[in-house]
Length: 225
Ligand SMILES: [Zn+2]
Ligand SMILES: [Zn+2]
Image 1: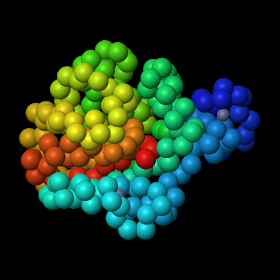
Image 2: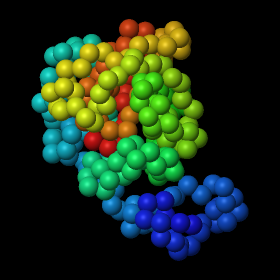
Image 3: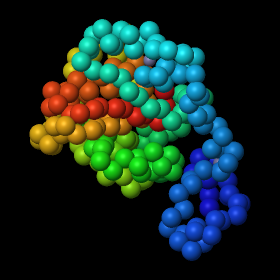
Image 4: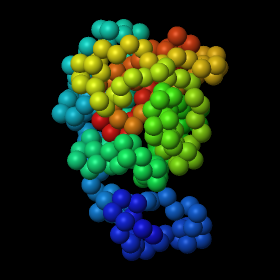
């Protein structure tokens, strides 16, 4: 196979199951590229995965005060390092749709043992969708064969998150509204999936909308933090 990121031909011994069932091959990167993406270390904030924290971080304390009814329970696969920043630039901003496959192995493993959970990708506004041609979070779940439910709709949007400074990001008004599917989430567990956790603003807005429908638990997952 060819590595999805560096395009080099990968020579590795195939596993027996990959020879018998070639369609099951899920690794899309060579080992060199795989190692460029650093896994989230152990010393992170137990709520939001911010690095270098043994206990709850300052940012989470601010959110706790603002949203006493919500608890951040976040899982992030990778650190937002140089490699990740290049990857997200190519995938999201240059619109390289092939890259939706990059982390399907991680996603598949993580969501495999959560059959009773409703997984919801963070939606894009109509404007961003028209610009990019795909929803990057939804496309990754599809590539990993993960069933999801669209519980949220994004209202129109003038400036993409990435073009906002930290202050603008933190002060945005509620960008989401509930879809009809929210009528079915009472007492159910929800996982919200986004590509990156930056300030937590987007996910907190999303949690706030869903919380009004009384799910039993809302946790969040991002590729990187
Ligand atoms: Zn590679
Ligand atoms: Zn935190």
